[in-house]
Image (cartoon, rainbow, N blue to C red; front, top):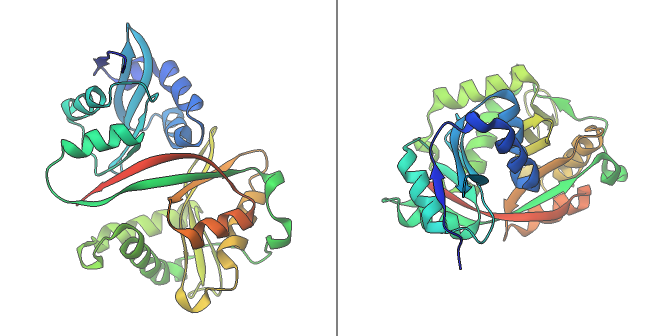
Amino acid sequence: MPRPLRIDTGPLYADRAAAVGLAQGAGPHGVYVWNALERGEGDGLLLAQRGHPVGLAWFGPRGNLVLIAPPDLDAAAVADGVVGVRLPWRVAMGPGAVVDALRSRCPGRALLHRDQIYYRANAAAAARDLVRGDVRPAQPADRDRLAQATLDLNHVDLHLDPARVDRRWLRDSIEERIAGGTTHVVGPVGAPDCKLDFGSSGPGGTVVEGVYTFPAARGQGLAAGLVATCIARAAAQPVCLHVGEHNAPARAAYARAGMAPADRCRILLLG
């Protein structure tokens, strides 16, 4: 039987230590939240039983919602608490039952509703034979190519119509990543063949996202080499990412790079 919940909708940071502890205990699913909590980013609520925090809902500034909860909690109660707090979000990730309950409470079309597999590795696990010497931070001259990669990836993987993407937001996001050194590429300046982004870095580790190889450059092992290189450079920090359960080519590339499956979650992207 699901355990009864008392939903505490007070500020998440009112018990920051408890929130950090829950994120730390969630494995790769909690890395993004752990890093964000250390920087004081986002907002949310704690899920409590008899006054003891047992889970959380973290709302990020980019419209991302991460749900951390043990499997025996009442999914309907968690979803009701998330809806009741009235904080904005567009994409949610968490336990399958909770994400499904949340979907049932959200009118409109879901662009994506599927299972994701987490992969994780540390520097010692990186496939050394794939580590490349030509991986570089993206430069301003790469901006247009990176914009096209983002549009293509979002269209294929997330079913987002490129015509509906705010080009100013896209440009600003790419420029921010270039300035911060969080996008890494393989290929000529102005025409990279493969890219990835560091979506988050901090005490929990590094979260990789946005891995993409242009069609003309596929079949050369670029994605596996790029990921392996970034893992090898991470020193003591673990590196993790998540990928669609049925995306066999991407999962094979991450395995070749030295990563191993570590957890799973469900993702919901609203239209």
